[in-house]
Amino acid sequence: MRFGAFIPQGWRHDLVGVEPAEHWPTMQRLARHIEGLGFESVWVYDHFHPVPVPTQEPVYEAWTLMTALATSTTTARLGQMCTCNTYRPPSYLAKVAACIDVISGGRLEMGIGAGWYEHEYLGYGYEFPKASTRIGMLREGVEIMRRMWTEDEVTYHGRHYSLSGALCRPKPLQKPRIPLWVAGGGEQLTLKIAAREADYTNFGYDLEQFRHKSEVLAGHCGDVGRPFDEITRSTNFNIALGETNDDLDDYFAWYRSHFEPIAGAERAEKMITGNYLEGGGLAGTPEQLVESLRAWEAAGLEYGIVYFQEAAYDTRRMDLFAREVMPELTSWEPARNRRAHRAPSAVMAEELRLRPDQPSDAGEARSLPEDSPRQGRLALENVRRSADAARQVGEYPETGVVVITASGPAAPALSGRERPSNSNCGGARAPGDWRFS
Figure 1 (spheres, one colour):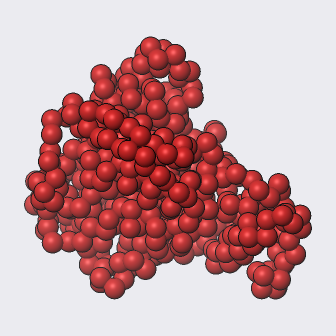
Figure 2 (cartoon, rainbow, N blue to C red):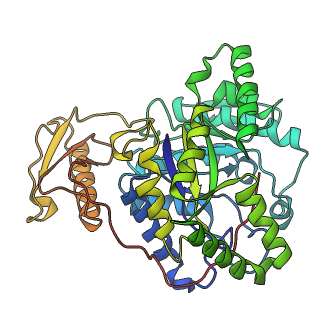
């Protein structure tokens, strides 16, 4: 199983108490921490108004964060779960995504869905059509994005969108294109779109629902003649983790005390039930979470995206998950040794030996292409940035070898690696959680 993790961005009232000047440093620090722990990817939500009730707490916009994270991380893939198709024209979104894929060195994931949060639509002056219309717009949006990323000039005339000679340069670095995650479990329409277009899906409030939706997806794949196993199935988990049952009780006590001022005691209690105890998440000790995840894995789940409500204030539980849960999953492997899609390799394979007692630019690169000095410089710079980041979290052995591609970030050797021991990425308090579908 592969793992990604959300950073706090305010939507779920997870930056409460953090001074505005510290919002971005907190998010940046956590993204790098997630990267250092071995998660494959860093994720954000695409929303404007906080939940479960709109308040004056800040919410950071998803694609602004994608750009910032592209320049602040070096190895983690970057995704949104999920971008609302109707908040931006899909042609414009395809252009933005292509640019960020280049800026990130080919690390972007495109999570896309039909949208559902009516309060935001009305607040921002967007039309909120019926669900079938929004899903029809999603289908056309996905078709447009695929074409914008792969064709020189796009003309498209659909029911909802029309393009006349649209150009999209630069193209994404990833080939054949940026991976598409179609989010949502609508059985008649959304999963049919996923069967045709998705590299990844994202659905399943609980295990029973996940199994059922998987069967429906398999049926749609059969209808369109696509192998079911071409699609990677993912879901999101709210994580309540304690080293012991008493520690878990402490977490829920913290959850109540921080969320009651926003939503009230009754609603806070219902959210604990809805987010953790009856679906929508996982609660328990490391051993209990491993047992639960193995059942999900047996049902075909290949990718879990986890959310820690308290991450902006304390990363101990996130660290515990990375240390004692992820390695126990049978198919788990360190994120730096794998990529779902890779950027094209203008540099066949080069190695840079790094000596901890020397600056990162003191290494010697070999086999950089003579006919592409610009791409060679980009490759070397990616190695330097990754080496610096790895030293910050103590992940290089005494002597390491980095294998890179010209447009992708470095993948440090992990033998002899030690995990960072820092457990706090902030000093404020957080409120509770919220269940969504």
